[in-house]
Image (cartoon, rainbow, N blue to C red; front, side):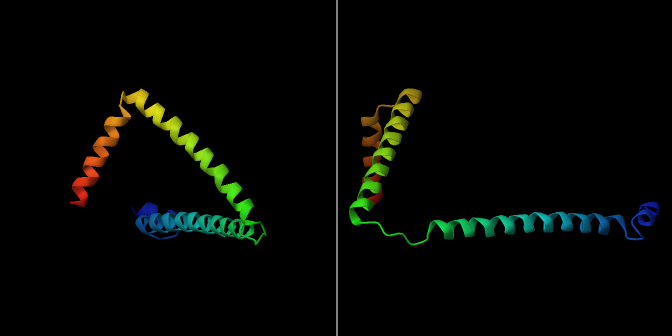
Length: 103
């Protein structure tokens, strides 16, 4: 133990190891903070005000709804096939649970 203390400048190895761990953690936190700053800047850039009409908003929303509906349908089919689940039974079970929770 004395030999390790000598090689660490007289600092006990436990203290030296703790310092090294804190320095690593500090570096990780600095990288995370730098990343967070970049993310916030990107979010700010995407939130710059743009002027679009209500109809354009509706078109965007409708397009997204169609995309999400397609994804949901594909997932439903996949779950049914993988687990051999009858969707009608699943919906009935869900309604039963919901009714029990509401009463």
